[in-house]
Length: 374
Image 1 (cartoon, helix red, strand yellow):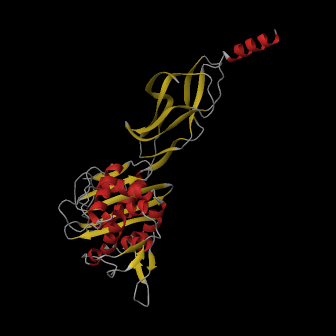
Image 2 (image 1 turned 120 degrees about the horizontal axis):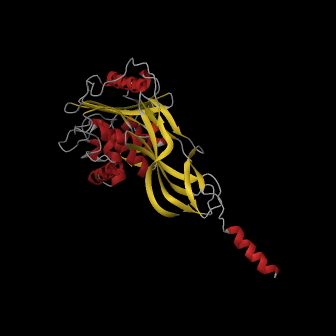
Image 3 (image 1 turned 180 degrees about the horizontal axis):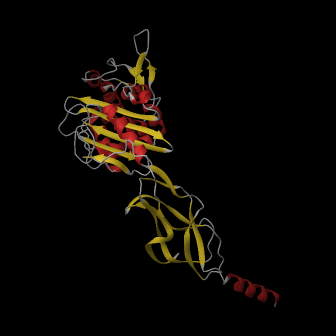
């Protein structure tokens, strides 16, 4: 490629989409009974509703979203995990592990996310991190990597600690990351499970505390939490009409009802719009020394974004002023950015969708053939 890169609005790719919605259930921003709330579209990360979403608050057992994600990423489901003296003695909700009892990591995760076992949280932390402090370091490093910069974990279960805080926005980011993991997704959508129980004639029967899984059509998970300090906290998710949302309410007395109301409001206010699809023309780029002066470009992924009534989505192209021939189909040209209101929600590779041969190639071949004949 040659030429200076310039970011410019793509000619002909200004997408102005006007929708007529039924506004029953549509939400006004900040209208919530929660201390803080955030609802986010899963694929783009676009925030569809927020109230005090950057306020740092305690999170109770919604902490376990990160605990489970780390365990899945760094452990193996069939690993044996043993309950230590520290895990046995942890207060709060429990799956009643006995000291020295061993379960698989998968069983511990079910106990963690369905029954919110604090004992399972400590056992998992010690297994993955070597000890709890090292695991907590991993939790904070992973949060920073995800972009949850206002979150600080002090433990793997969410019991009260002045330094154990998050925001509704950060927790939605963490949940969004976790829901892209298929093992995590399957775990938090499980409504009931049985796991072994050493010394008993029957297994442990676990029931998911997340009522939305049975009461809200399309619910996908993810985690409840409660302490007297944090109040009722809920990370929730649902899918409808091709759009998937994740949301958070912190300090919310009517947590399940409020989650349903926020989901209904966002689903009724926003529609997922396909702005540009694979193979569809994304404009042209100038070709230097080619048989054609221009090459068509396209993207290889769908660019979809949720829009509300009257909103416009744009495709911004970051491409060189010229590229040099020869040009081949599928050759990297630049980057396409999907934006709404000047904010970027997705970027994908731009490639050439056609072949452009060098105009000098024929002359070079003729010279070689002519010399060979002579």
